[in-house]
Length: 409
Image 1 (cartoon, one colour):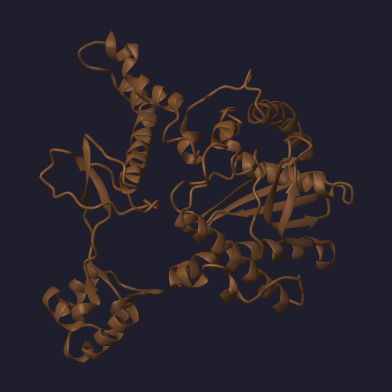
Image 2 (image 1 turned 90 degrees about the vertical axis):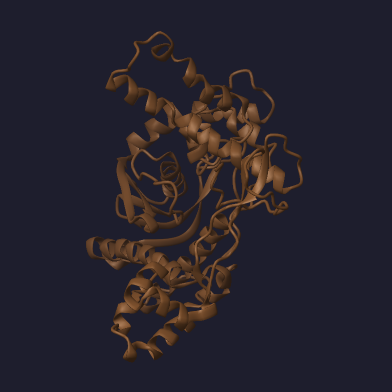
């Protein structure tokens, strides 16, 4: 398990640079965003890779590489029952595809590749990515990509990232195999999302030549300093694609705020018909997304010590949590006989029930008596509030990670 390298015009960033050909050039001026969910995703990839190797070994197939998942970086930080179940859901999907290929084509006719570098530089300068699972069967190459995030739903159809992986797989192995089709899949276990598409080689190459190659040439030229043909094109890809410039991009700010200049509002009737309201609701998405990112940027700067004139830092809301679920479960079991609940009432496999459910089962007062200091209410995340808010100001958190940012009160 080695750390993944990333291309300037990466497959994962293609939803940005295929639309906004200036994005790669602008992002180059920003550091990578150090996020917990990024490290968690890397950990999930590593654990799933180990488990697939273990499964293959149990089926008589050995693929070189680490099989001890406990050695995966950040394993101790992120591993828990929910994490393990989500990883296993992906592993079950992936191994199911392998079994399906074995049944259809015979084991001797199936090539299995894990964490494979896929080069599509024939269409994108220095373009490459990593295929989580690549299967080569007679007449077809299959690429499966794990998405461990639970925030943005990732559609497996017409997905430029996984298509580029398919393109890279085709380009890498076409000299050895006669491919007629390329099958690509997105596996997003935390959203129970498994989708994909199958394209003929002709369809995939036509898309690459007509859509990818010309846009990539413009984006690469902009990255190298020639911005004469590149354009800023703001849109949903700014946020959904996690563009590093999305917090301060001028074009995005202008695009978002421009919704208020819509002539249907300025010159419209006293009340708007449903079709106009629906259209404006759709059009207003950029300002909502931009507003959240602008708040997040200002919050991060304030936590780094920047002085604000219109906002201040305050402590946000928080929920009570159980510090040690195993210890809490044991304590509740000790009192099960004297109360009207059973051990099975306390859990929803594979986790202990939440506090609200436990209070209904055990009783709010009784639960507090039993668990005592195992229940805590942590401090809320530092957030922004208007300078004239009656909330008490707090000291900067001085942390770059604001994934739990809630916005303005």
